[in-house]
Length: 170
Ligand code: SF4
Image (cartoon, rainbow, N blue to C red; front, side, top):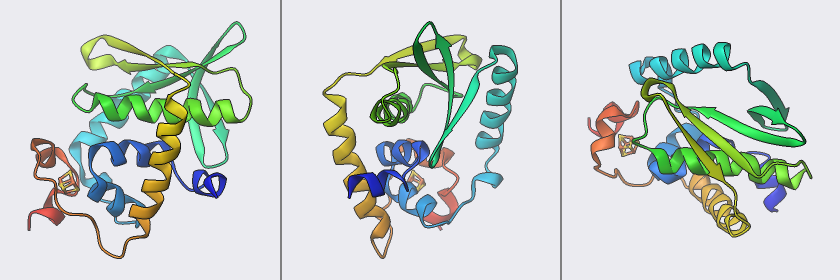
């Protein structure tokens, strides 16, 4: 059951689950407004520029595309983000990638989140205790996605920056 759920859930959905369950529902039910969000566009440009400089490799596994570097025998997940405001969600997105790579028997135990605009990097270390948390989150994500209606508006300062703002605060 969990394996089938994993095949449908991407890293960005795990991040949305942490930030806002309503956002997760919209995104997962194909209501996508990202292309209209200036913030997302800026994020994509930063990401592309950083990738040009850092020369990460991309690994496609099932439903995921993961950027990584290989140091000796270890695979290190790399993720580029614009700001640290939603850092918790970035950390769990990276942990989810590590979780999936580990399940495939690949030697991956940590990741690096790059914040090029801030000239900062954050190292994410995967703990064994993260696995049950991720499994529980995946089951909850699956439940939320299948709900008929989106969860309630969260009324957080982040809403103003969210691409679904107009849908939530009409
Ligand atoms: S505007 Fe707020 S409540 Fe609506 S989806 Fe975005 S974060 Fe969630």
